[in-house]
Length: 427
Image (tube, rainbow, N blue to C red; front, side, top):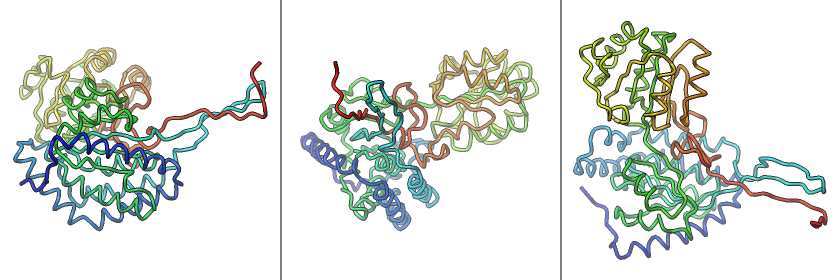
């Protein structure tokens, strides 16, 4: 079923320039908005989401049918699917963002110079954010809300699979903005599945200040290769859980099962398990029992296969793979040094965890693993802006510049320097 009316390809450049110009104009107004205004927009959007559950689910059904026609697998369909619980989570996320202090016009640093000048580094909005994402309709609410809170206008380009759902959610955001007397153009959704719209966004340096992609490797690579607009990349989540020889077995079982199987299709799901050789004979069969019982396929190295015949042979490619499915790779390591080296080589530098009661080893792991998020004795599925207290996230940044880890409202700001004088001139 495809009830969406497409825009002719030759009209896309004109459409995108118009969206860009309106976003730029709206960003100037939003940058000056009071925090109370921004919070009102989000609170009213949350009310609208709750009042629009039936409509949103109807639109989501259209997307699910379209996704099935496209041959999306079960993990992708799970990402796409909305229900009352997920819509409530979106609304609650907006309300949580309202409780966050205003990230704009904060004095980040202040100092005096010998000549009497007072210098301040002050947070300001970036301007216009271009958000390009796939499959997850909830990103529409999360990204828009964080941009509103941080004083940025946003242009949302949803994946073709979730366009109906995204439009229904965007309508609620527009309603909230209007009630708060802010321009609806602060949040604009590209109204086409035509991929040429993405190409246009990547060249819109006059209107868009930063592009944030959230999707698969092909989308990210295209943006890396083609974008003339600066990018804040959200790469894949090849996350690891390392069970050290001093791990508590009960904690290891509980955490690993949650980290892998709670939701297999999210970027914070553990994709690779490392176990110290010293405990592998005892631990691995028990952990394998839990995983297999939960429906997970296990692919391992030769040592792990000898310890449990149910484990299939892993290839070199498996160590690099983000499965987004009920599959996990397993490697037996000699010690923490080998585990850290393996993670730093194969990880996508998203989220990696250690399970151990040895505080010294935990500190070494947390210090030496070169990832955006490192964890001790907890599930990698906590790699989420909402769980970090950000209300929501626009993605997990795996690079090292500007922002790293969950990107919330505070990370969608830049800064400027303000210099106060009383008549000083430079000699």
